[in-house]
Length: 312
Ligand code: HXC
Image 1 (cartoon, rainbow, N blue to C red):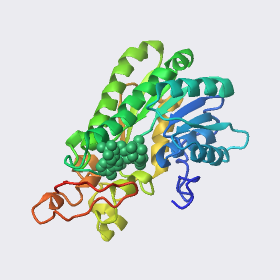
Image 2 (image 1 turned 30 degrees about the horizontal axis):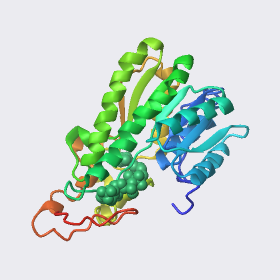
Image 3 (image 1 turned 30 degrees about the vertical axis):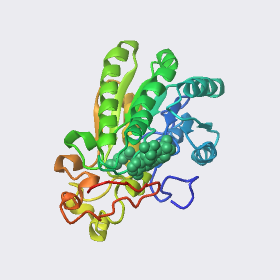
């Protein structure tokens, strides 16, 4: 994406035409990872349908710029961007306070902050593993804890953005699979503990979503042959990658009146792909692990670091 302030694909639709305008009038959404492609798409759809929003990201200037872009979807909307690292519980508490001061309350929580990169277990340091667990799992816990007093007041709803990597196991994703499995367990418990307070907790597990940072990082060009990239029919039952708007539609459903009795579920939005075991890092499996493939370079994505001593 050339302009980091506009992470969502401009050509993508917001959501399907199934939803009535203003269904989220006067609702407030609080979203971590809100400057990323998928979560900004979720928030933009909710704002379009009447909500106001606070989005959180580690890069404050970028997050504020994305918030300003999201606000354009509905004149009169309020969308605030906060610089906040979900690993810092006290910073989250302060951001919740600032949100309530500005927007009055929190109805919907999206825990979407996530870290990811491809790595073999040899290439993964203890700190690298911990970093992803801290961002994804501990960060989700921190966010829920910080928001919980507000969610109790509104009988709010929680969505965790997870993945499908851990359903079958995914090569090069030990750290992320472990973190997402933990997030799923956290959500299931919250559905039971918070349901009696009128709060629902659900998971959205996106598959391969086109034009996202996740796809750029996890499906680098040298891992997916060009013809498959252009025509993923063999990789996905529906024959295509997903769109940000399709994740947004699922989000709208879970937060809308239509989702009021849905609690403790995982809504997989991947076209049925995980049932075919075609997870992203497995496109060239097991080729890249076989003798002779030692020089295969899957680490071409932004932020990738050389893995000394890594054996593919
Ligand atoms: C091996 C790596 C690495 C890599 C970082 N590390 N990148 N190890 N391979 N490619 C190691 C570092 O060497 C260090 O360990 C440790 O991780 C922490 O690195 P830092 O750079 O200090 O950490 P930090 O800046 O806090 O975060 C790093 C990061 C983050 C986790 C990589 O920048 C990140 O993930 N950004 C991407 C965000 C993103 O794309 N989110 C969307 C994910 S999509 P040492 O031992 O050296 O100290 C998603 C869903 C996909 O997850 C679903 C699709 C199907």
